[in-house]
Length: 378
View 1: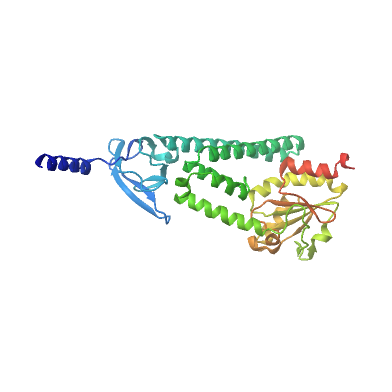
View 2: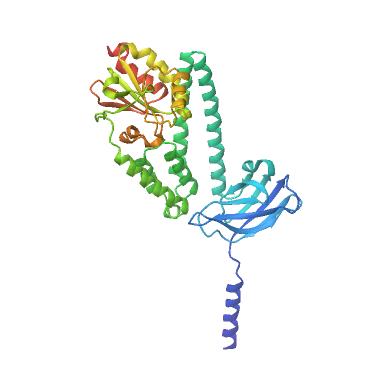
């Protein structure tokens, strides 16, 4: 009996002293003073930050041993009296960090497949962003110099870049169904209007339950549901008849859609404060100037709030077509009637008022108008 009791006691002691597996952080730092406080932060399901642990930087390094993360979510480091943070994914691995005080966002995080995927994703998205900025600059210069062929070629490259970015994000979401990075990529696709909400829902359904039940997974599910509900409420779609409307012109007169129609009409929702709209305007001007004599009309519907900003943008961008605005921002009744939730947004209608295309930009817009009004269509 004594042997049995002793064996049971040893088993109990072993069970009580067994270490729970967690993760560690070993960090090298640059630019921080000795004694700088470091905080490990998590995010609760209610979205509030929680301090998990803390330590201090000594001789340009710090180390932390942490218990397993309680939820499938990002953690982040903050530093006393220093703005910014360092984002990472807690994994049950040794995590190595290299952190520079003057460039927290450029910190190097090594350790675990999730962190590897996350930082590869961030790096790739940053590369897309830099390329997009460069193409935008080239496009604006070509437009100002009236180099229409060059501008058109650059616009085509912009569309190719957007397609490449969309395909990359989608591949991340579809190929990493157990990763939070898939939730990020899918959320980005939805926010950037790169993926219809129905397709986003299908991709979300394929994610593993552990990801769906995370805070970010639940939030994304709500966004998808809300976006789907909004899309179902849209009244104007391909093949439907465009709803007639009237609005005040810059001169204060009422102008209707019917009064503005040609053989082909573009209803262009935009605003002076909308940077993508202003960047697209040179392309729309070029298309209008090329095809107006063949029957193309445009009516601009602005979501501006201030009369002066609206009329100045019309003059600055040489938008020599009809314009209306209720100056009610997103509460504009015309935008609401057409289900517009982001701009620029365009509806192309024929002379009978049927919607034959939507939301075409850059070379896609010119190609469509050329098909409808170009020499081959005559």
